[in-house]
Each structure stands twice: as structure tokens, then as C-alpha cells.
Amino acid sequence: MLLADRIRRINDSRTVAVAQTVLRLQHRGVDILSLATGEPDFPTPSHIKDAAVQAIAADRTKYTEVTGIPELREAIVSKLARDNDLHCSVEEVAVTCGGKHAIMCAILALCQKGDEVIIPVPYWMSYEQQVRLADAVPVFIDTVPENNFMLQPEQLREKITPQTKLLILNNPCNPTGTVYDYVTLAAIADIVKKTGIYVLVDEVYEKIVFDGKSHISLASFSEIRDQVITVNGVSKTYSMTGWRIGFVAACKEIIAAIAKIQSHSTSNPTTVAQWAAVAALTESQECVNRMVEAFEQRRNAMFSRLTKIPGVQCEKPAGTFYVFPRMDFFYGSNYNNWVIEDSTSLCQFLLEEEQVALVPGSAFGTDAHVRFSFATSMETIHKALDRIERGLTKLQSTMG
Image 1 (cartoon, rainbow, N blue to C red):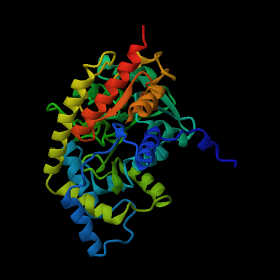
Image 2 (cartoon, rainbow, N blue to C red):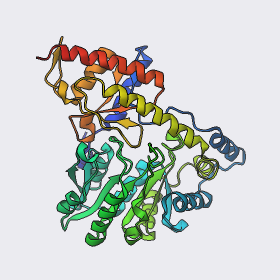
Image 3 (cartoon, rainbow, N blue to C red):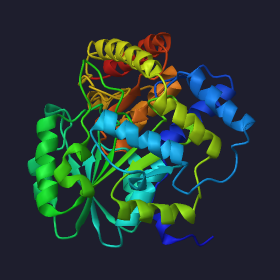
Image 4 (spheres, helix red, strand yellow):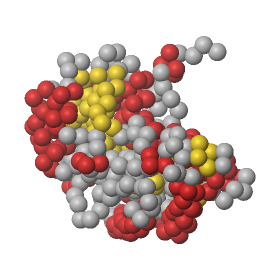
């Protein structure tokens, strides 16, 4: 079959592939412990589910406006003003079929063949693939643990060319857990203002921050407001991953372009899920506080365990539900028929030898690291880390 060139330019999602492998093995009865999950393990809060049931009972199941029901867009406007110091109108927001869909629509609206899109590394893998689908050119900037994996303003300045159209910034960041500070964001805002580039900021993990830190939205810097596209959603904050509701805030011209794309692809997001999202954004946020408190306890437990394993170097994440330790110490080791060459072979070894699922760092552009998720129970975390420590001890025993 002769498929389009754009399909040959992109790769499958590695996180989705790992998740599907875990499900297949578990279905066969294999005792797999997964630290690969990119979604909260908590159920969707009851009041949100109740809102969906009420919407169905009230026959709110028809088409809506492409950009979402007015009630949800108004709730988003209020949320952005309250939480993000971002003041906009309902014409400057659109509801999408998840945050990933919002990012894809925004990239398609802004970028064309030959445009350069700057992506800090490590990065969520879909950014690169979506840029390639738009016929644009991804340009990567490596970040380092010494700077908490934060894009440095001078790095950005050096990479901008006349072809640069867009910077993609993930704050807080998957997979590193980086949360950008005010000083760094202010410096980035200054560069954005002077160069005229656009910034797409993915803020889906904004509420999952620890140690008393506060998330700061780049769009709150008023001087670049019209150059910033803010993407968010209800998936991570409210444990609503399968409901597929995201949203995007930007200037009216960009929102109109996104609406045009959406009108010819998905039409409106699922109506019932939109009403559930209204409840999520407008009712009590105590459910969020409880989940974040649990995530912080799990983060502390996982970080403490990892830092005690010889050969593992680990930075403490300030947000998200991931830890991203450096594990290339074990590359070059041999155990039985296993030869550990990179993050992929290390993760495969731990999956088959110890029945623990992780995501290789190569999926995020950084092969020296491996992503661990603590979006699971404390019991699973400790059992999985026991197995991982046992497996790494096997590898270390073969090293000189």
C-alpha cells in the first residue's frame, strides 16, 4: 500500500505502545507492575460523573458549537482569570477533543512547510510528530539536569532564525517534572516579544506541583499575550483522561483558525463530556487538592528509593507525576542473554526479567534517562521498585 509521505515521516507513540504491551501481558495473566502510566489512577470525582449523568437525563446529547458550549467556554474564561492571570473573552477560547487535539490544531493553524518549531529536550513525543505532520521542521534544544531541565533564555535566543515560527514549552514538563520559575519565564517572554515568534504552552499538568511551588502561565505576561497559545484540559487535573476534553486560549484570529480545522475534522467535542467539564471547573476543587497531596507523597517515596540505588542519578521533580532518572550507568552490562545498550533495552530487560513497565528516555529524545510514573498506588510503587532494584543488581553484578 502506498501511504502518504507524511505518515512515513512520523513514528508511533512509544507511551501508547508500552501501555498496550502492558495490557496484553496482563490479559494473559502476567503479573506486570506498571510505572509507565501517563494518567492518574484515581477515579473521576463523583460530582463530575453526576453532571454527565444529569446531562444525559436532560437529553443534552446533540451537536454543540464547534468551539464548545457557551457554559464551558465561560467556565474556562473564569478559570484562566482566576488561576492563570490570563484575561480573555469567550471568543478567545475553544474546547477541543483533548489537549493533544488542541496542540495539533494550533500547530496546523500556525505552521506550514519550512517553518521551524523549537522544542526543548526532553519533550513529550507527540510534539515532534505533530510538527512533522504539519510539514514544519522541529528544531531541538537540549536541556540539562543542572538547570532542572529548564530551557535557558540564551539557548532560545541562539536558536531563533528567520524561519522560526513557534516555540513549544511544556510547563510543568512531561517527562522531567520541571516547573518554570518567574525569572526564566520573564526572560523568555522578553525574547518572544523582541523576535515576534509564537509560543505554544502546554499546561495540562499545571495543578500537579509540589513543595508549595506555584505554576506561572507565560500568557500572564501581558506584553506577549497575543503571541501565546495556552493549551490545557481536564484530563490530568481531574482524572478525566478518557473524557477527551481539552481547551485552548489564544487571540481571536488563531481561535477562528482552530475552529475552522475542528469543523472539518471532529466537529464539537463530546457534548456530555463538556457538561462534565463544566462541573469540574466550577465546583469544589477539594478533589484536586487530595489527588495532588497523594501525588506528592508518592513522589517523595519514589525519589527517596531511587536515590539510594547505586548507579541511578535522580533530580527531584517539582511537578507532574513523573521522575526522570539518569540510568546510562547500566548501559554496556550483560546478564544471561541480555545486552543492555540503551534505554530501550534496559526497559525491555526490566519488563521481561522483573515484570515492571517503564518508558525509555529515547521516547523523549534523551536516551540516558528512563521515565518512571508515580500515578499508581504506594503499594505498587514499592513493589515495582523492589523488582527494579533486584534487576539492576543483577546487571551491576556483571560489570567490572
